[in-house]
Length: 408
Image (cartoon, rainbow, N blue to C red; front, side, top):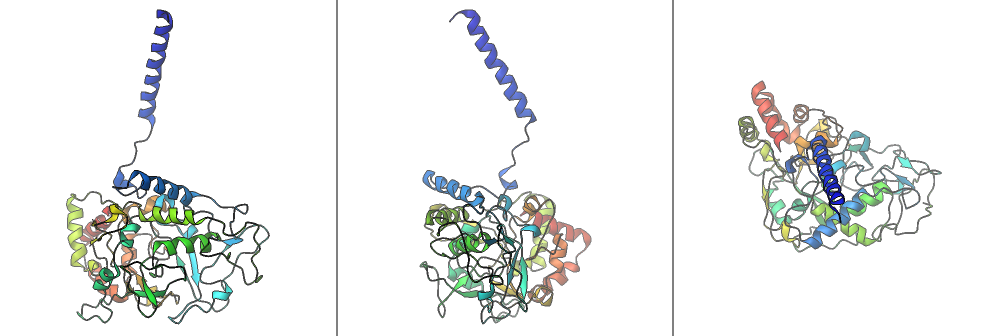
């Protein structure tokens, strides 16, 4: 190679370096780890990271009429309801209907418990049957679900006080629900009269993340698996569900990968913990007794996923049902929960909710509150005392409490 050609090559590499350097200056800065909700937990093996990636890919897979969508459905992918693994938006809300007491859902043969308000061409979306009560559910965030799943039933029961034996006005209790026939209980799950403790969902009606995953595929997207082989049906127009895609429409490996993905999404990491207002706001949170239901910390035991074992984490929930008063009683329920009872929503990741909700908050189970302050003021029943204490705070202390909540 002569010197002229060599000098040209070197000059080309130098030019490329200049372009790359210039582009790096133009590109937006990557977000810090505590500014996002998606990504794997620390400590996964290389093999587990591969399965996490497979679950992540499946979570974003878009369905259509050619690969099993519907015929009636709500969403076309898991990610469409959980953008960046955060909270959903009113446009991606789910409508649940048909159960107004703890006896059971009388509308299962009329399309319950979930409304499929969209349909593929040639089919008709569902309507809520006459006489059925209903509730709007905003999809919750996915962050840290595996840590909540790794807790034992005994740990959750230790927080329960269904008869308010300590007289503090808080009577949290578990929601016992029937398990599907294919459910395999774990050693830490304690049955009661043939039912198991639910811990996921607005009413704590899902026992574990596998059930949550299978039901979401079937009820949200109309996708069948070996666990639920029948597509959802619009019983108001037909009692059959014609579908051109052979069942099951996804393999069990996809279910397993998505379940693993949900179990291993990282938890939310707090921000600005050392800010004086955040420190003061945390103390105010305790002073107004919000921690009575939004229990700050838990510690897992031994898990089949080593990265989930013996981890202390801070979700700010007791995973229990609480009566939230008539203002939040919409006449619909699931399992043994009463219509005014709701599972304590985890608060971690609250400050990042806007990023997945179109730039503003949509809080509470149905997204009715567009500010944190309004969400607090919606609390009644067992939350009434804390709401009253919050209302009595000075403007400055209210802002410190809100700043703390936004740091989670």
